[in-house]
Image (cartoon, rainbow, N blue to C red; front, side):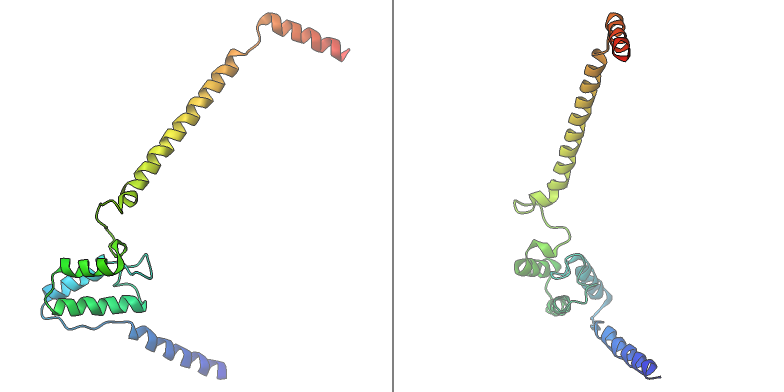
Length: 157
């Protein structure tokens, strides 16, 4: 019976924590609400690394959601908000960072690896064909086969 009471108390305590992660902001209109939603879904949480700010429950994501809301209320544009966050956290907070000298490897690295992979695969296939052709050219002639059979017969006797 004590175990059941403890389980119920633990469940109630956890439900309180889950509800604490929900943000409830008042917006002036639906367009502003949509701007907020777009921004928090397009920006990455600096701590979680593979979650956007909207989905993350990390304290920094909660702070960033609050900061984005504050900046929207001040009338700042989406570009100003994104630039502020990029200045503070780097291009990492964007899911689609701009193409520049710092992000060339990020944008073109996968394509370069794919091209290198195809080149290595082609080299392996060419070498296998050459070694197969070389092995085929080293087949024995009829005279060599007869001589080999004669040598093997002598050895067996």
